[in-house]
Length: 148
Image (tube, rainbow, N blue to C red):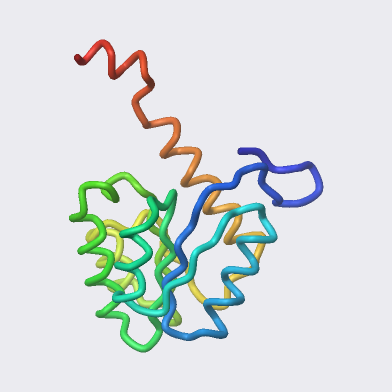
C-alpha cells in the first residue's frame, strides 16, 4: 500500500466495514474510503454488522455510532473478543473531544481515535498506516512454518 506523490490514493483494495447509525455520515465515510481505493461494506447497526461479518472478513473496521458513544465502545470490546477480528485495525470516530472517551476506546481495543468532522485524506492516511502496521506485524508463511 502506497500513497501517490500528489494524493492519498492508495493502491490497496483492503476491505473496510463502516459501521455508522447515521446513513448520510456512513455514505460520506464510505465515499471517502472508496475514493482512496478501499472496498467498503456498510452497516447501520450491530445487527447489520453481524450479517456482514458472517459473509466476509474485513481488513479494518471503522466504527462511528454517534447516537450512543457507549454503544460504540461496547461494540469495539465485542469485536476485539472475536477471534477473527483480534488483529483487525479498528478506527473509532466520535463527535466529542473527550479524553476519557478516547482512553476508553483505546483500552477496549480501538487502534485509532478520530474526531468528526474528519477530512477524507486524513482518514485514508490513518487507515493506510494502521493496515501497514498490521501487515508488518503479521507472521509470514516462513514464520508460521518455524512455529509448526
